[in-house]
Image 1 (tube, one colour):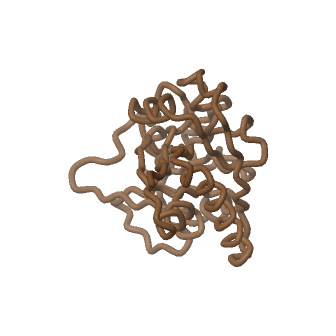
Image 2 (cartoon, rainbow, N blue to C red; image 1 turned 135 degrees about the vertical axis):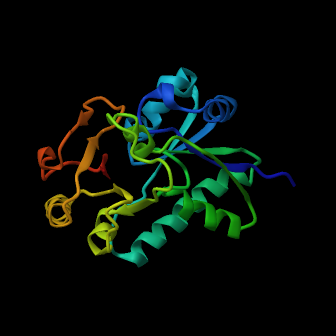
Length: 226
């Protein structure tokens, strides 16, 4: 019996023009689209995709409840429920396209679905997308990474625990909630940084100085050290 495939598709950082041709083709060629959220047509990832593939409005769109909670048992239960929702289509030989911001392998909720779906005997395929920090790098006035310089990709919480090397480049993702602490550490280390909020999205803000970044900067913020 044939089964459908679960595709994880990175739609890029925000501008529909930055969505890959691979992502475009997968979305255009399949009828079942899945996104995070109880109101799927308001999903950021959905609306990025819609900007590149208007036909998505005619497709079946599934909203998956994937809460951000520290209750691991509760979160795991929701992941199991969402995997079963997806499998209800796969078992009928219908492909499901799960949309995620940036790249599908970088801090994406797709990983939790993929491991469960594969465990249950189904196939997953990943379509890469441009991550937010790559788009943010292009906003800078200088080339951050050249020669033998190393790049470290960290969450805000991980950055605060990291022993920094001043000659390296640090990409701080998901810094919300730790902005002031990150600023303090950068000052202590005498390091400059280049924050970008909502990169390539409506409301994009590019800051030339870390001190210009507001404490309440949102989830879609990336900080890159110079």
